Image (cartoon, rainbow, N blue to C red; front, side, top):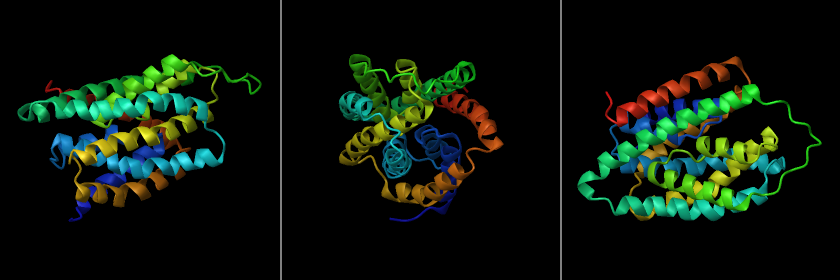
Length: 259
């Protein structure tokens, strides 16, 4: 297993952006692997998922200790997301091998466009939402919609590695509008751990993981996430958050073959 320090530098940049914005790494790191390091699409998805499985618990542990996680919502999400992720990986295995690369790129492109859209929706919601009253009672779990959200999100993550955080958090905020923002973020981070874990294990079993790629990414991404999180309250956060959807749209259109 060889270490590619160019990949580590890319992981550092991706980690910085994840730490600054709170956005999931799949939408940033997977296209980077495909475009700049010419990793085949299936290996890029699998390797990124294993790297994300190492990074996700770091943020989740902070929120768990702070008791800002709705474990009841997490449980119902996982009822859908874990089998959804496994199904997503299984769907890739039934694709004709001659067309796997093309199909994964198309799916990844569509997922990036969807992620960019949800980021814009989330920012609009943040600007328009009134401050929540701390005395507003917690809403109960909307079981069927929550399981369906998990199933849909899990399938997308299993297929593309994109969406475990950025897609899920927007729909969670729509399903649970009275959920305080810190609990929304904490719940989203923790639910992503079993989701990404299921998808990562699926790709490990199918041989779609390059450990040299994953290790190289983590060498840069782990300190990058930490440094980015330290500066997440700065003005750079808002600037980067506005720029990322543009990058995602361009990457998505490129993967879809628009240009």
